[in-house]
Length: 127
Image (cartoon, rainbow, N blue to C red; front, side):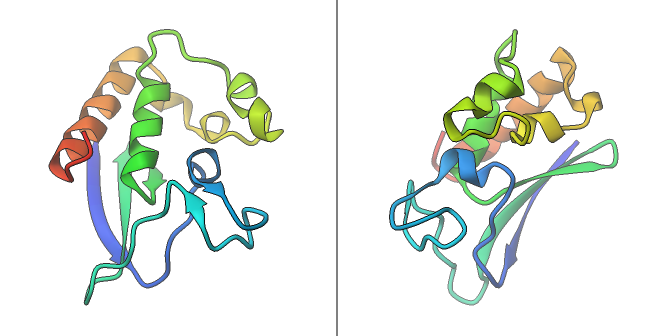
């Protein structure tokens, strides 16, 4: 399992974005302001994008808040079902958890994911 940070030219949106960053000025696809806001571009680098790789699959994070959200969901010993998690946004079958590879869902693997994410959050000063 590997978590890496890269920088991209445009502000990224990930499968977790709509469940973490609430649009303030329109629909999610057209909004320009969010709560919490997405990270700003770093001069000379671009926008941060974290990628967690495990067993040939990847999960992307556009912000530390998205990593904290994923750690909270995956860190529960008994996870809520994607249907429950997506109810608030009428996304009962399109929650990011419902698209996650089953190899990532064992308790041992989820503990490792949460550990990687919390270590990175501490490193970026959000943990």
